[in-house]
Length: 74
Image 1: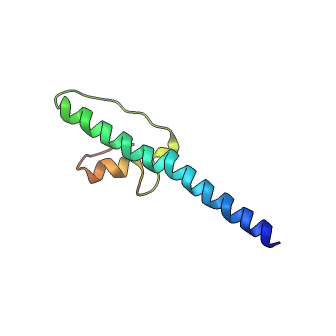
Image 2: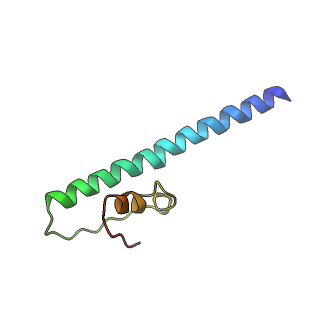
């Protein structure tokens, strides 16, 4: 049973690392790139689309952009 518990813990840790890379780190990069693009061309309108998993939580793209001072509509 202890070996099963270890494998479950390792699997959970690997899943958390993967989700951080796939979502949180990627969201930060996307928000930074959007910010750069908007600042580079302030008079231009843009439309950005994301998959649903990039919206929820405090590390969602919309929250990250709001923290940079943008008004975001989903």
